[in-house]
Image 1: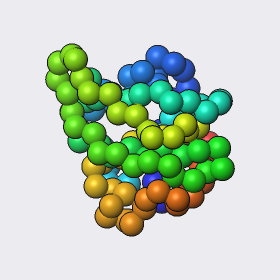
Image 2 (image 1 turned 135 degrees about the horizontal axis):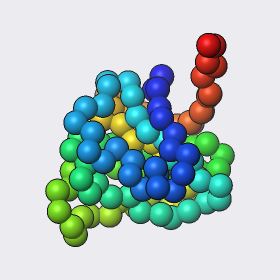
Image 3 (image 1 turned 135 degrees about the vertical axis):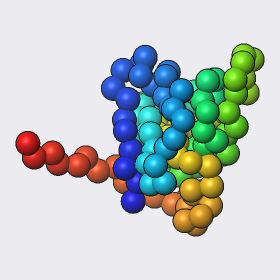
Amino acid sequence: MLAVGVPDTPLQQARGLMGRGHLGADDGMAFVFTAPTSAAFWMKDTKIPLSIAFWNSSGHIVDVLDMTPCRAAPCRRYRATHPFVGAVEVNRGYFRRYGIGIGDRVRLEQAACNL
């Protein structure tokens, strides 16, 4: 199970994991969209090699890509081969290591917080 952050605003989504020097082994960032999209992701100023999985409205993974850090524009843009409603970024190799791939199902759960 991954522990993911979910950016709340377009600015937070655009920033993503930029500038981070470390990502925990079971940590990631999930991007959730209100409608299917074909938006591209990029690695500008991202220091950590990442893998990204895209899922569709039925919760099934439609694509998994490895992404390489980029220090200066122009940076490669990474796109899923099919429209998606969500994507999750993790340390590169996470999906391969755990046998997660196209067709697998994604389930987001909100953790309860007791103060």
